Image (cartoon, rainbow, N blue to C red):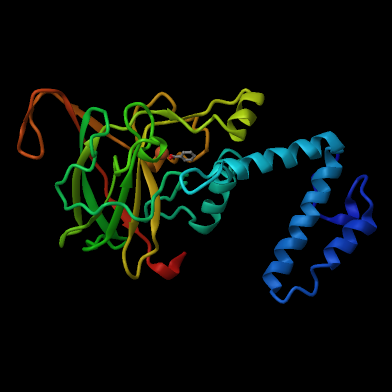
Length: 298
Ligand code: BEZ
Ligand code: FE
């Protein structure tokens, strides 16, 4: 096995003149950034194909894989994001663009189930929309790095039901379920109820699932609640809160975990819940503060 390199002069088998000619073909790109990105992509692609001595059958299989990934994608399913996720590319890009800071909440993958226009809710509302699961009451604050409350922050939340499915995965469902948009109150607080997230497999009935099966990789994600928090003057935060104690922590199929994002989901016996109502079944509470970086600091 040769050393990995993006230097075309060091390619092990390739036709170096070919690589050089392709690199030069991007020299006149009006966008200098496009030229830079494409030259690097070509250099790495040629080095990769040379390194593994890619066969024609393997190349054809890769083209067929990408074709199927495109064909299975639509406005409800994004197989190419999923591919980026299972290859760790999504987390690499997030890590470079949102470096972990001492103060701000860490970012993680958005995943394929975010919906731009979620229904609006008020603090205190139940956003489950009938999604199955054990009741859970969520609360916390949206803060600046200095610890001051951020009022009016837009908070998008979305999660899977107790069968591990998001609303958009149910063809027969017209309305939103387990997703909503809230605003933080004057003191930065947010609070709402829904259900306890459970671990679930990423969609594995498509080409990405075939890849995981071929590699004998697990498709599970540890239980989590998705949040996207945005406010004028602050960098938008896309993150999760993972359920402490989940058996899949450490084995996330998309490498999205971060220790700082693991939150306590506390179980309570039947009784008075945070909404003041008496519950005759056990319920959970989860409290998590989100700290936003200022917009131009990332
Ligand atoms: C999700 O958590 O919704 C998700 C993230 C990446 C891939 C698949 C699902
Ligand atoms: Fe998820």
